[in-house]
Length: 290
Picture 1: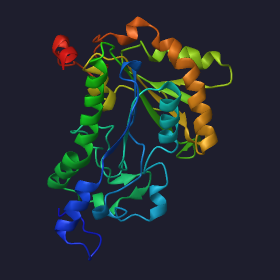
Picture 2: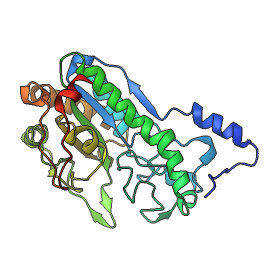
Picture 3: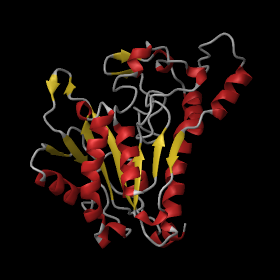
């Protein structure tokens, strides 16, 4: 498949230059020894110029299929409150999903919640390779680089991934206000679930409405395989659709996280394996030195 040139005006060379100028991630600076790295895989619905709107009506990109509504605002506010670094994607999940492994069949979605994505419908291996090289891999390299920068201080960071989910799915209301997704490493998820439940005003999901065990997804790649403590939070989108909600949730989390992160076990590299199957063994000493 030829990459879609959705405008007749720019030349291929101009489109290539525009792609090179499109930054695939946003990095928020923070204290390297903070012991916490925030990541936001679905922070943005932005698209490089060559892709236009992927053939979709612009309103479709404003829905949850384009990005995780409210997640970027929570991430930025939480990074500010805690003084910790963050890495956020800067491209729509419909272009290529950074929370999927490179071999995942849903890496480039052709159909998403009833919407056919015209520019993805007949996407071929060459186009997927292009999107991997220009968008997906640079985001993951940025996460890896931030982990290395933080580890160099002598403090092993924990990873906190911020997502959001729709309040209604296929006509069924979702009762949870917030949920934590995790695989076999309980160090971050268990105390955070307990802390959120103790606040008394939340329905907290444990691996709801999705399962946190997904082979080769973002946290598998940066947490499960490397032994870093990690958890993925899903906040219901109606609670963080505006700035007030995003700040309120960042404040709520900022009160809980420091106490959890005080635990020494969250700053050790420990391999727990995965419910998805065997995890290839890695040299922890080599990772620590990286």
